[in-house]
Amino acid sequence: MRISILALLAADLPTTFGIPSQPPISNTTKLPTHFGVLLFPHFQAVDMYGPMDLINSISMLYANQTSMHVTVLAKTLDPVSTAMMPGGFGQSTVPTMTFDDYFSSRKAEDNQTSTESEDCGDGDGSHAVAKRAMRFGARQMSHDKMPSKSDPGDIDVLIVPGGGGTRKDMTAEIAFVKKLYPNLQYIFSVCTGASILARAGVLDGKSATTNKRSFSWVASTGPNVKWVPTARWVQDGNVWTTSGINAGIDGAFAWVSHVYGDDVSDYMAKSLEHNRQTDAHNDPFGKIWDVKGAT
Ligand SMILES: *[C@@H]1O[C@H](CO)[C@@H](O)[C@H](O)[C@H]1NC(C)=O
Ligand SMILES: *[C@@H]1O[C@H](CO)[C@@H](O)[C@H](O)[C@H]1NC(C)=O
Ligand SMILES: *[C@@H]1O[C@H](CO)[C@@H](O)[C@H](O)[C@H]1NC(C)=O
Image 1 (cartoon, rainbow, N blue to C red):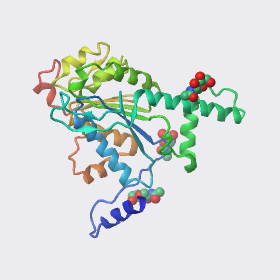
Image 2 (cartoon, rainbow, N blue to C red):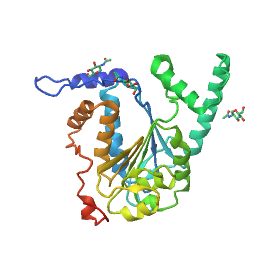
Image 3 (spheres, rainbow, N blue to C red):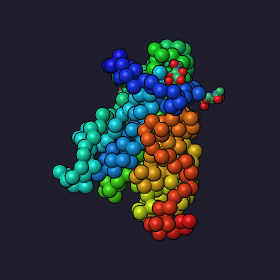
Image 4 (tube, rainbow, N blue to C red):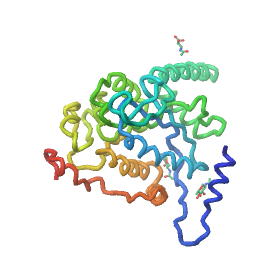
């Protein structure tokens, strides 16, 4: 597998001078390794596949500097369709793990870690944050302990798309986000996905944005959120929220700049032939959709 990918890349090697050269990731100390994608029926395809296509491409072009794993999470393992109605027009994505199975797998891993730390004579193996730091440190330090396919470790980054499904019963999705968030490095929502974060309490007291056409509905799901009416994306600490659908792609490039470096983000934009919008405030859609306070 590895050989065939390398052969493929080699076949693409530039034969002319003056084309962009690939910048290395300058600081690999704390790169996220485990990406989670939350899905529900009637999600918006680009909300998920826009940012994920960028992540997928980084994992390919930077295979020598990164170790990346993705888990596609949903309430059940049934294929999740973008269609509004079961059997309606749409395309399906297959989840790799249910919300419940993710937490049981982490519990089993926690048990293992506390056994290991007892073996090492570490008295207090019970503190979740310390355990996580230990696992994370170990991942960074030793290739032997790099996340494997069978145990990729805790999720570092959760991507939450929006779509019509956010207006249906989201009880399981909201509970999952609420429980997972304290253990995440980053959470990233696109479009009306912000309503799931809002209802999970993740956005309380924070600045956030969402789809401008659905702005008033999403804002109603988070009365304690500082909703920003003119923004293509908003970063508040480790919480990234982006505006409608395609804005998620620019938000994802901004996140990549933050995590991997702006030169890497720029190189990826050229590789994916995307005209990046780098100004988060350049957002005409608030006014177009008559969002209160939009400028
Ligand atoms: C990884 O690949 C990039 C891009 O080709 C290169 O600049 C960098 O030096 C490589 N890093 C390692 C550790 O080989
Ligand atoms: C690299 O990143 C780590 C973690 O964010 C940070 O502590 C360290 O200072 C960075 N190193 C450099 C040279 O910027
Ligand atoms: C983890 O350990 C606890 C207490 O020892 C036990 O009750 C629980 O069933 C274990 N969980 C798993 C998934 O092994």
